[in-house]
Length: 492
Ligand code: MN
Image (tube, rainbow, N blue to C red; front, top):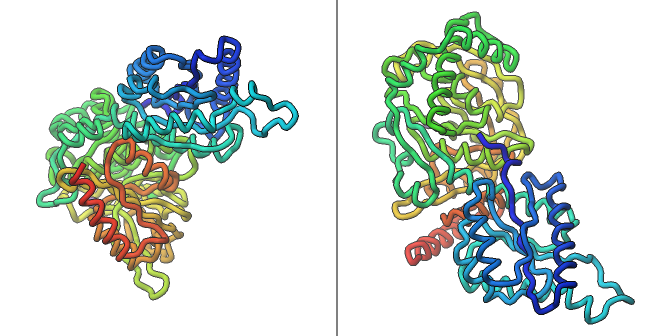
């Protein structure tokens, strides 16, 4: 899997030949200086490469065509140091296939009281040039991020860095392949969806592989590889079982799944307990440890949440806090402190853990297989986001719910799975009401690293609907928003 710092953003600066070679040379120097400063910022996760000062329609079109064709280019950042008549940009921007950010900044922070003259003002006129540039993007209806502020300010770096993560998410979508072992769980609605539409809209390639191929792959794993992975498990987690043969089987399954993913160039997968013919255990520890390496996973054939888990993990690479597949399971309805308990049958990602995960072996009533090994832990505390993608029939809707995760308030010694607890915003009753009203799935991606702004920018780049539930949400307000959004999306 590609690392986030392998992606680059092209810094393209606008000007025009009217000002003469001397001014263009200064514009070029300043553009390089700004690109280098952004590139070096710890808040910016990707490369920022100065590419060109565009002074003619042909030059601008050429650079945008090159950006489209570079697989490492995850987007463009434009800035008009001087005035740059924006009809020059129409042909180029009309061809743009990459995410687009308009950085509205200025090379100088302050107006030089004594030194300012007409020459200075003609060189440093982004206040004026960027308005011309903004108009053409608005006129062409181009989705774009606008970041406003001085290029040395941390706030600008943070905003730009966050948007870059959204744009990398869009690039990851274009590269994403999801392997399905088995179909969707029988009769379940929300985990279904239009895979052709998902590929048209989001770029995801979602295809199926027989579980028999996985079983034969598992059977071929050399014992030495299993021993090595068992050692890694012992180093990473607490071994809380004597039944090492069961753990060894999970290691064998993990290696088998990873081999198929690597062979197919896939970064996410699903399986289902209804289609495990030839397997001894449902993958538990195996799926959990694969998720901790950045793979996306969804249970019960849920390819949408598998893909989304991979995208969110990729977008948030390097940030503190984990992300993983999650499911709302049961509530604690203590008045005034209502909490949701999240878990899954087995497959909760250890990146969400607040303590050291333990490898345990317990019976599993579902699936009719041997007792599987799984990681058991309590989730971390802090602000988090629950993310769900649903197929509304004709469009995809992304639902974001801000929650406050807490350390589980009970020990729950007989609960044989990893558990996370949280307080939904604005409170459990309104939050759950809003989630259900919007059609949010029982499966989600939980992330301590992703921000609502990051996911909203990603949704805007992908051209999908977004619903945001937070401390300000009211049911009346949400009903109105959903009604208006429904009309708007049908008119599109
Ligand atoms: Mn489930």
